[in-house]
Length: 148
Ligand SMILES: [Mg+2]
Image 1 (tube, rainbow, N blue to C red):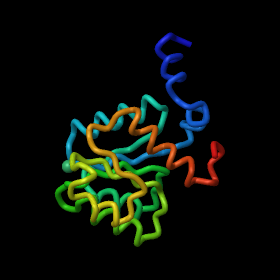
Image 2: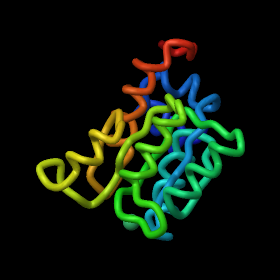
Image 3: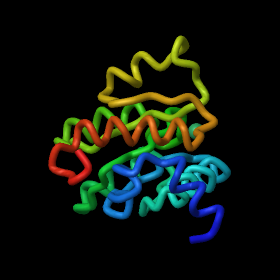
């Protein structure tokens, strides 16, 4: 194990690091830089992920039978925003952990977003610490996963 790997492993709760390979995530964001950043953070924790560029594509992915343990959902997007997409996914019976990730502050205009069916909300920029806090919610909710 290299020094940097050892440091990363030490920073991550062992319960998550052991099972991270089993977790799948979908990044939903219209901004390329955000997509790359979120993918890098997920990859660093060993989480397989896919990206789509708006809410409609996230809904379409689920309509075609795909499913993910975690969805990182932006709020402001063209075609279909995060509020509408979250509402739609919940109405389809999708029970994945959906974490809203946007530039709006929690005190700001995110009430409607949270009420649409979010499990968690984090303000951008997303960090490893924020992602770990989302993953802890996933661990609590996904009782079928081994790390509970
Ligand atoms: Mg956006």
